[in-house]
Length: 422
Ligand code: GDP
Ligand code: IMO
Ligand code: MG
Image (tube, rainbow, N blue to C red):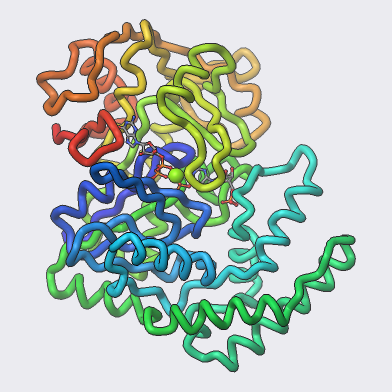
């Protein structure tokens, strides 16, 4: 099949950026299909470290076409800066294509995001404050501004001023500073001038590539448990992060889809608020955070850390139809004497192997653990399955069995070469 999809299967930051970079060795095109610059995808090549927010992680492979699909919400100023930064570091961004149907994020969306968070009390989501929710809300309200407008400056200015004035009325009502629309417009106009040549019909580009038999890889952002429909609502992001999102978010018919890669971190992390049954508040949690360098790639916030949750990850893998697992950050567990795997929840004294829809139920779910012995030696330089310590293989096999998918890749460090196929 010409199209494979790669998604995060937990609450994001599973190592998708690294895996996309590795897999694009044999790919012609990489497509982002949802989310925006709330994403932070890290790619380490030699001594260079890059954090991508909107530009697809295939950008480091010359000849791989990188597309930002219609389902993405795009901050034009953020995208311009990201492309300029990459270009300054010698990365060729000339081939990037931005969908004319992708909705745009402006400063007023970011302010509305921050305003909602500041007034939300216990319902605070802990968003990245990148304006993601308000931009998707405008799309659903049918008052969003799309990528095509970047190529029509007069129309863009009129629409931007109308929307900004509308938001300013809300800001004044809420007692916060309104936007300086004239000043903001100048920044938007500059970004539009920069981005206009990159705007195109990505749906046509993708479907022509499919017809030509090219190999396409869709790059998910966030993770299945942050999906707007299937995640821990309302503590989710505002898009469909599961594999199905690639069809609508890129304009790809389901019959063209082949493999679904699920990136699975060997333990669990979460940034922001919301239930997290296996969260650790003890030394083991601190060890995962320090050894795994679990600090947000976008906001720098410390990530909450916990044991592997097979109930949550299994549910997410089921919805995305994951058939190939890429298990990352195995090396982070190297020195731990024993490892917990959550195989069920206990809610109000009743055990369940299912992921509850109720956020309240999830918040009081007590994880039921299975304990496996650690291996207590370094896996950082391991380059094949056979060379892994016996206990590491047992641990990985147990994860795969619980989430019902096959292990295809294991990652034992952030670099490209710290990866092997199984
Ligand atoms: P993404 O959002 O899914 O692309 O993941 P992030 O880039 O936000 O976070 C993953 C972090 O783990 C990054 O700093 C990566 O460089 C790093 N990383 C990826 N794979 C591995 C691995 O196997 N071992 C270790 N130690 N770090 C990894
Ligand atoms: P990548 O692609 C981890 C989280 C935020 C917050 C919630 C909603 O790097 O894995 P939003 O700004 O989207 O409205 O925030 O979603 N979140 C992420 N967590 N990784 C991400 O992206 C995330 N993008 C959003 O922390 O809890
Ligand atoms: Mg990330």
